[in-house]
Image (tube, rainbow, N blue to C red; front, side):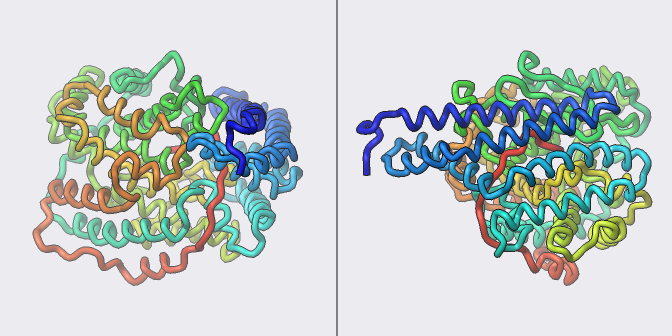
Length: 538
């Protein structure tokens, strides 16, 4: 095998140059997508659909070019340094997957996504799933075809799911999700049977949107958001889009729910900090890109839950909230902490869900999209199945499509297989935060003082600076010293919610209901590949 020194760096440099062009086209498409969801006039869809299709086609041509294949073959014969080997590994994964899919199919998916986004927004406003159903059906058909082009012999949902978490086998994902389900189901049941009453009405009332937006901006200031490289807007569904030079986040406001806007803003801040913390010198290479969606979600869930829902945060933040909203002057830190961490009995909206039942929302979506892709469910039947599963898992039945199967943006983009990464991200967040708490002296006290720099530095050093150099498990191990595991998450929720709800000693956990066990018993398996979406949604 030739060494890198012997043959020179020409092939590697050419590969980077070609990949940077591909990255630039992808990034431009992300800006157009952001614009469509935030500022574009409603009538702009026809032109935007064509624009996105052209960019998608250009990106596909660039990454599937035969010359990239030749360069990858040449570099396979070299002994590359670790970072360069990681770059080649990531580009090869992207190239090989993209090269499997015909360009006209890529264009069809892009056009459908642009049209489906507008249809979804209109259907949600009208509370009418039938307006969106044809686009969902088309997406499912196209994505089945997409999966078959990559590997016709495997479960299509398994193939699609790998796009969002290419580095963990589905068997590993299944094991982690099952561990979470087995512990959360009985824990939530115990909480609902508890006689403990929390101060859940601490923030009842009307909170003007303008005041909430001002508080959201102040919150970002406090947390350390870089306004020179970022901005905040509103959108139908909160999301983050961007890179280390330009990252844009959105949130949404409800006059009766100030905690909802606060939580979504902090969540998107976590995504943004990851983007902005990536190495600027590595822009256009995998070393300057995020390590896919499980890790991305770990950053947003860490800030949302381990910081934004902590008592330390509320000791610091409550006085600022009282300044903005005079009607909450009698709320104590304990009241605010309890209100932010209550476990709902009747919540229908995933992005407004509490920290525990959130994962049952993920379960509903996982099962439905899996059955759609695998041909076990027709698009027209989604509302009924959705409502049935909500009643089964969450104990409440949606009365409208807008608060049911139309609430999330993901299926309008054809992102089947995305939802499990939310739970994986929450699990990883707990593991990372436990390591940070171990390494940073008096972390809780620092948060109370409003000093977030040590946590920023820890995440930058242990996660952000590496980009996609390490695969998921190796990144977690590098940061925490442990393999990726659900143990830290389960310890965290057990301890936190047992204290909140005064759960009795010796209670029995780990015996989920028969119906839920049956539903989770047939995960798709195998496979690892990848894609990098340019938007991260709440």
